[in-house]
Amino acid sequence: MASLNLKGITKIYPHSGGQKKSKKKAGDPEKKVNLQVTAEGVIAVQEFNLDIKDKEFIVLVGPSGCGKSTTLRMVAGLEEISGGELYIDGKLMNDVEPKNRDIAMVFQSYALYPHMTVYENMAFPLKLRKTDKAEIDRRVKEAAETLDITQYLDRKPKALSGGQRQRVAIGRAIVREPKVLLMDEPLSNLDAKLRNQMRAEIIKLRQKINTTFIYVTHDQTEAMTLGDRIVIMKDGFIQQIGTPQEVFDHPANLFVAGFIGMPQMNFFDAKLLCEGGKYFVSVGGCKVELSGDKQKNLAAKKVSAQAITLGVRPSHMVLAKQPGNTLAAKVEVSEMMGSEVHFHANAEGRDVVVIVPTMDATGTHIDSFRAGDQMNLTFSGNVCHVFGQDGKNLEF
Image (tube, rainbow, N blue to C red; front, side, top):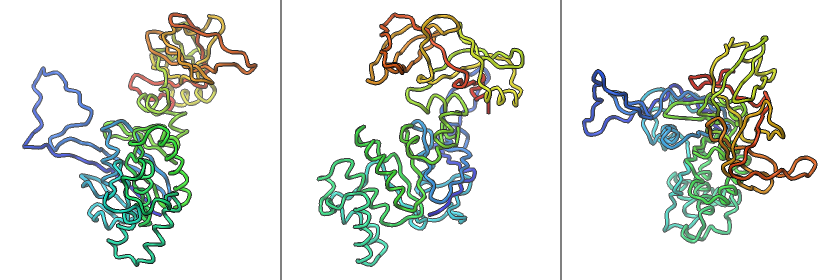
């Protein structure tokens, strides 16, 4: 029930123990670090700008150490904001105490009190606020019913499964009826089956309570299924913001293209050609004309012919029956997945994955390929992603 505005949010961790940034001497090799190091310290989050609408579900996603949890903790007030401004419903929150921000947080470790029952754990934040007993009882039972944990109210956490404990942790957060609910990798301690179940539970919960969600995860499947919009981060910087479909269909750069999608996108060293006013991509023995939309986007930006990195998703690769204007690939491993086969192959010196249905539309099973066999691959012009030498998508 709140809108948030993060304007130029930055987090700098000062050097510890009097450490100072060493001066670089002439001729010294460059040292590569993931996060930027300055005289002030290590910059964990840099120039983070995001407007979150009321009741929106935002997912911060990225690899470990990218700054997503740090950003969440700054919103919660658990980390000091080094630079920039945080507004909740138009009110500046930089120096407001965590308890006064009307925010609740669900942690990865559940953080339940082992000596308290489920009921007591959920009621605890309300008791601290000296809420009326009848109101506490109503809210706890209502939250328990929403999360389907009513039957566990008299149990202690040690008698619950991981999924049940996480429900209790979520229940303890929502009984406060916070304006903003923050969730820091809440499903990472669960096994795959429970994660799938809890994802569905969180989607149902979102439909039942009027709260703005900010959810942190390193799992792109969670990001794609839960978020209204996804914020993809790397090394403290935002790489792209968009709906799940937008970031899947139109990745802004090579990092986003490789991070979103499972299995990850295939990349090839290729050429972008411009012939007769039309754009083509050429890789190996395969030359493909790009689709109309891609032609317009590249022409609008006046993109010239150049060496590129070509991206094609595994499910968009197609097996050709005969060689000729195709990409030759040598099979290394095949994985039968039931309705489809995942072929791991080598093409043009690159490892690629090709996903093929086990039978075609007529019900005919595909010919089996074994390690060492050659396959001929092709793809259409509407599924190509064209990246320049700087890693950015040339269409946008």
